[in-house]
Length: 226
Image (cartoon, rainbow, N blue to C red; front, side, top):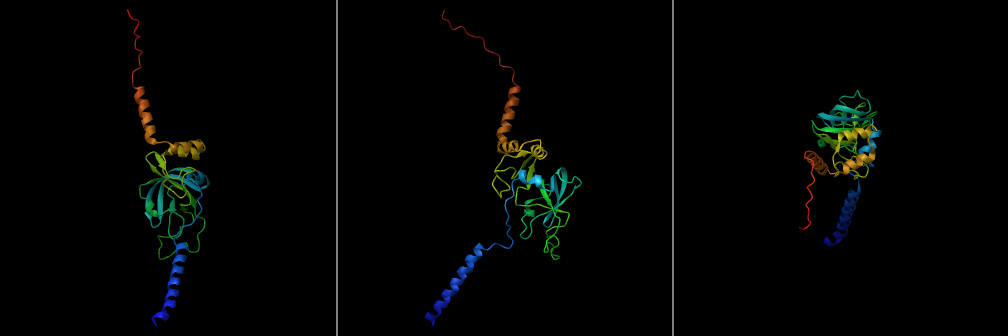
C-alpha cells in the first residue's frame, strides 16, 4: 500500500513545485508596472499643473496642497487635491508625505475615471475625482523641498525609479528658472552635481579673504656681504 502510494505523492509534489514557480513569475495584483517617463526636468514641462506648495491635509489616499507658487498650468488652483496610490495605481504611497511638508509637484489632471475607480465601501480610497489631480510614480514627478533647496529625481542621468537619488540639493529658484526657460538644463545638471558643503566652504573662504587687510610687500633685504 505504501509503495503504491509513492507515484501519487510524487505527482502531488511536482504539482506544488509547478504552482510555486508560476507564483514566482506571476505579477502581484497590487503591483504597479510602468515605463520610466523621465526625470523632473523632463516630465514637468508636459504636466498639467506644476506647483511649489505645502501639504495642508491628508485623507485616505489623497493629499490637499496649499499652493505657494504656480510654476505651470492654471494659476487659480490654490488648493488642488492630489490622489496617490491605492490598489495597483502607479503612484507614490500617501505615507511618503506628511502635513506641513513642502514639495514641488508635477501633476496630471484627472479627466475620466475607470469603471472600478470608486468603491462605496472605501470612499476615502479611490482613483480620484474628475477635475482633481494625480501624482505619478513613473517619473520624477515630485521634489522634496528643505529650506531653499529641492532634491529628488531632478535631471536626466539619475537612476530610474529612484525618487531619492544621491545628489546635491538645488536651489528652488534655479528649478523655477529652468521651468521658465531662463536657466539651461546643463546648468541644472551641474548644480545637482556640486557638493553644497564644498560650496559653503568656498563662500566662507571668499568672505574671510575679503575681510583681511591688503597684504603689504615686505622690504627687500640686501643679502650682499659687507
